[in-house]
Length: 133
Image (tube, rainbow, N blue to C red; front, side, top):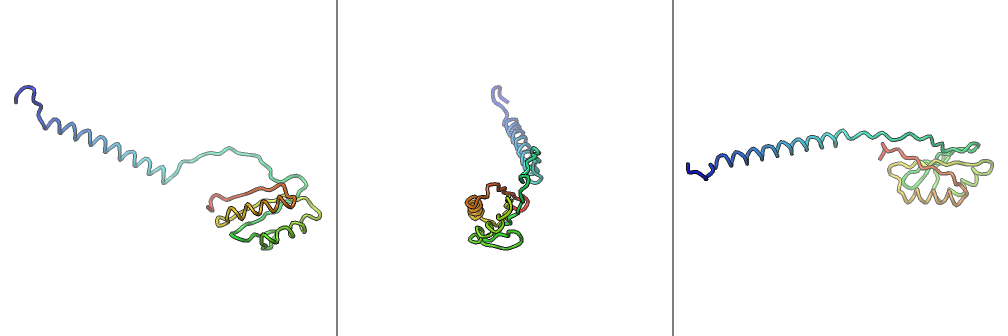
């Protein structure tokens, strides 16, 4: 071998070693992210002591589906809501909890909240179940 000329097999060895290290790191990163995606990351949310019902008021749950709702066990439409509110409001103050299903449209829920506000119902809570989405 002549001095000053590097042997090609050593250069190939360094390149192959570097490539193997990069591939091992890439596999490691993929495995870590795959396990995070599969099992998720647990987040602990802060606890709140929010009481939605006001003392002395009756709480009514309004179950909302795609284009209809259930109020006090009866299925009604958005057009029937003001008449039902007048019937319910005669003798008591009301607090409403709106529970939309996963198929409920946000515009329909927004129209229900507007109708409640227009009819003097100011204590409205929107309650969702994240597991159903």
